[in-house]
Length: 280
Image (tube, rainbow, N blue to C red; front, side, top):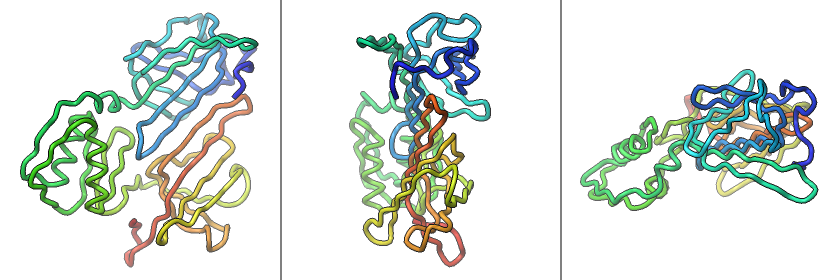
């Protein structure tokens, strides 16, 4: 996004911006927003970047105090919280020909806890028990729905989620981290929300890649702030047999541009078992 054009310039209250920032006891609306980018996923930490024109006041009501690294922060729209995490960096930027900017970058709270972990040894533990311990250690809520698989001894060194992802692949179970929860199960976790996608506005692009086996990978772009979020199911309908079907959202990207919101989604196909339930 060009940094020379801000979103909401001229309205004085940032009414066209469409986001609110909350940290500690502050709840503010940016006056001159250059960029808002939010990345949500089941296989990587959620990220948010909010870039403002470096000109006081930064927020409506004359507020000019910025969040600092380590502050908990929430980015929300008028209808929902889009991101919750911890401010990681506050960066001031200058480039010839462009307005000075300040970028607030935040990540999921559990990300910082993954680094610098002391080695831990687990003896005669099930994969589910190990996953629960790692989840609680990272401040995540464990949701375990898999058969017991005994592990004689496990040494956890460095990033515990990296180890857990490797063990999940080895034991052919599904691991997802999303919305402050860690899911481990025989089948891919689903939120229970389902969306039907058909041709036409607000869908602006669709591509479906046929991967190994019967897997399909779908990439979708929408005009506006589309509803699907990670772990939601989306049903493609009316695109042909090579694209139609049920998919699980794995990644979601929300971008606020001068023209409004854009949403990008990456999803993987789900098969249906004899009882009509989705499974990987």
